[in-house]
Every structure is written in structure tokens, then in C-alpha cells.
Length: 186
Image 1 (cartoon, rainbow, N blue to C red):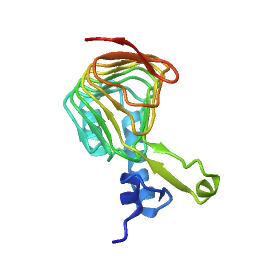
Image 2 (tube, rainbow, N blue to C red):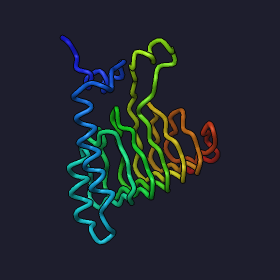
Image 3 (cartoon, rainbow, N blue to C red):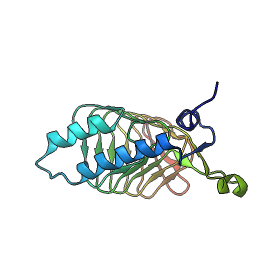
Image 4 (cartoon, helix red, strand yellow):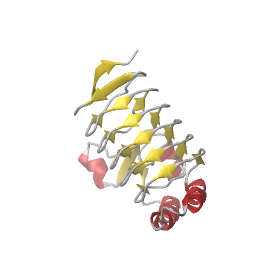
């Protein structure tokens, strides 16, 4: 059976982001994001309605401070009481699962997208994506970058400016570039 480029993307296989279906889905997201980012703080219900249309799933009481950016939105699954401060970015070329009570400081970046290291494949325009999972009750400090394929456990804090390249377990404080565990919270 022949896979679509979107199916390849979500399967973690090489895919072409220039596929017409993916371009159309990106344009849909950009339209919704433009509307979302132009709302005011008095328009919380409108923001929620836009997020319900943009995301695959959004829980109760989300608070994403504009400006916010993502690739598609349809691959983002957010739990209850998600808070994202100014300038957060989610490159959701694969699934991003965010638990309940997750707090993101300004300019947190969550990436599922990445490029092949082989330049000949890169020149063909092919890309890759790996899912990201963030557990419940997680705090991610300002400017942190969550890289493709990473899982962050429940009750964990990621320090500001961290670059998270590998999974981080439950109940720890982790920070740095590369991010490493600096304290156990058990």
C-alpha cells in the first residue's frame, strides 16, 4: 500500500513537506494562528474556540499567550490547564502529547521536526519527524528547546535555556545544554 506524505511524516519516515495536502494543512493552521494571535486578553472564549479547531485535542482552561506558532495544530494533544507564555512554538510534524497542568515559560520550543544529516537526502527536500510527549504537572523554563522524540515525565521541571535531547524521567529537575538531571524530587 502506498503511503501519503502525511502518513510517512506521522510514521517517522522520510517525507516531503511540499506535498499539496501538507501545504493545505499548513495554510489552515496559519489562518487559525493569525486569528488567534490577533485576539485580545478579553477574548478568552474565542481563543478557546480557535484552539479547539486548531488542535487535535485541547483540554479545559488552556491559556496560550499570543504570539503562538505551530506547523499544523492537528497533531497537538493538550490536556487540561495548559499554560504557554509569549512566543512559544510547537513544530508538530509528528504528534505532541502534553499532559495536564503543564506550564511553559516564554519562548519554549517543542520540535518534532528534523532534517536528515545526509546532505544528499536533505537536497531532495525530505524531512523527518519524531513524536514528543510531556507528562502531567511539568514546568518548562524560558527558552527551553524540547527536541524530536523526547519524553518528559510527570512532575518534572526543565530549567530555562535547556536543550532536551533525551528522555527525562518523572519527578526530577533537569537543566543545561545538553539537559541533564540535577536533582531528584522523590
